[in-house]
Image 1 (cartoon, rainbow, N blue to C red):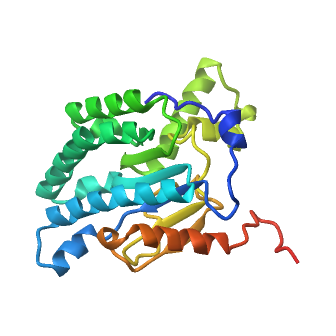
Image 2: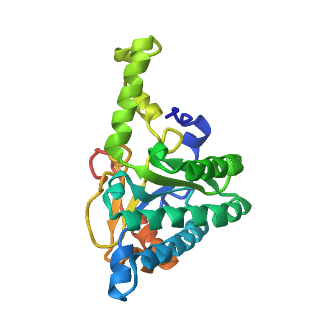
Length: 252
């Protein structure tokens, strides 16, 4: 997997209202339970969840969020029943073909992180086309984690650093946090300020483990298909009331 573009000084300097997170990451949990509660097939829960994501993008734009990263399909999701995996892949195809032009029209930049080599070739082609089409957009930056696992991401980064050391382009004593960041899938993104998980579970589930070292966490019982624009605004409001100390003492 090619190394992502490093975080640029312009991105690093980008500022906004401190009460609004610059980067929100979200674990979209609860599609299956939403469908089960209504006696519907899981496929319809995933479809409703995909529609909910569109509302979240609008909520982020309205609130001034600059980066939005969603956990769409984890590396562990490959272990689900084959029929459900097939439904999810078909849904991915459908929304890639239907929504990317709309995202581009709204000046949204799209990128995908994760092990895309496990995806079908036609889906890989759609991902590359979406990234190329939106590469120069300057609005909301949407990152979609597909076939993604944070441990796998870090192992891949370590392997590429080891290769660079062997080839003589990197020395072991030069490795620091910044170096590791450059080898991660998210090298061109600031770390998340706020991570939201819907559905009631309170864990990270192998999502952005390195990047979330100092991220504020927000958990809600609301199932993802029911998570609306007002819900994300409520999460942003709570974030704005927190004091981020990054390991320092509380201000007095």
